[in-house]
Each structure stands twice: as structure tokens, then as C-alpha cells.
Image (cartoon, rainbow, N blue to C red; front, side, top):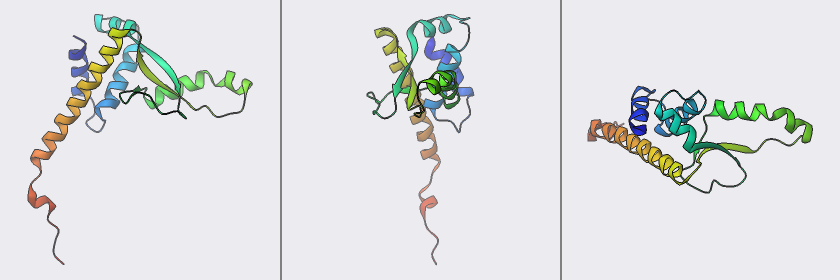
Length: 139
């Protein structure tokens, strides 16, 4: 049910965006609105936004970061407090995290699905390429 909802969103998304960017935008939209469907309710229960420090490497390669505009909005909200506390730049990053073991599995499944979609797009592109496309013109 959740993968189907994401699949429909992914198919209507801009082809220039990577599947991981589309996943990030979809999760942000689901969390940023009042839950109206069962999918929204599950996302609200199982996925949270976590804050990390960018100076440390992300510990998991499948980390799904928030879209840039959403991350900027969250940083701006805390900006007044941070300016009062110190003048140091904000090195924090925001990402989606499962709130329970089932939430972690859900995010992993969504990530795997988005990567399989990306591989499918690449495969379609490769099948349209011919060997003659790589020949260099002779001087």
C-alpha cells in the first residue's frame, strides 16, 4: 500500500530528479501535512525527522536526507536561538529515521524501491545506446 503510493508519486515526478530526491520530497510532503489517508498515518507513526552533525560522516549509507528547502526551513526556525547562543555556523543536517524497527524496515524498503527504479531508468537508457554512438570522428 505504501510502496504503491510512492510508486504513483515517483512516476509523476520530474525525470531530472533522482529517485532518492523524489523519495525525500515525498516523505517530507507526507510528514508536513495532516494525515488524511492510511499511508499518511503510517508515515506519521513510523518516520521521524532526526538531526545530525555534518562534520561526522553519516553512519548508514542509506540515509535519506530532507529536501534542501525543508532543511533550510528547519534551520531557519532554530536560527534565532542559535544566534543568541553563539555565532558558530550551523553544521547540522536533517534526515528521516525510523521511529521503531518497523519504521526502519519501511524506510529501507522505500529506499530499495527508489534505487530499483533508478536502475530501471538507467537500464532503459543503456538499451537505447548503440555502439556507433561512441565512435569519435576522425580528424
